[in-house]
Length: 151
Image (cartoon, rainbow, N blue to C red; front, side, top):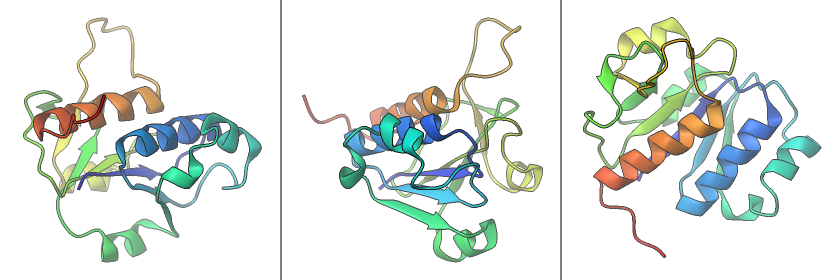
């Protein structure tokens, strides 16, 4: 089973949209504190609409505590990643890690784990919106693993 991990997310609507994507795909969502919002934030709830009961959300107080339970391969998504999104071979137990909107992932994570980038044709664009990046990455990993069942 794939899992989505947001490390120090800052913007409630992004996290709400990601929760909605996780609900649609049956993917667990892990949030690593500190968060840039309260988990009961109305903007967070609004972006997730009424799908919150359909997503398993786990909040971890820090990366160290997360590491104690997150066994398996961590795949870091970073604009400076070394592996192309579609050329990377995802595995069923992967943890897909995404950093906060302003700073990305901590450098020690990207040095220790495989890093993947989402290609962009326009070099003047630094990055995509976090919720868009998660959706692109999650659906590519699901496609590779044959998890596209549904309508």
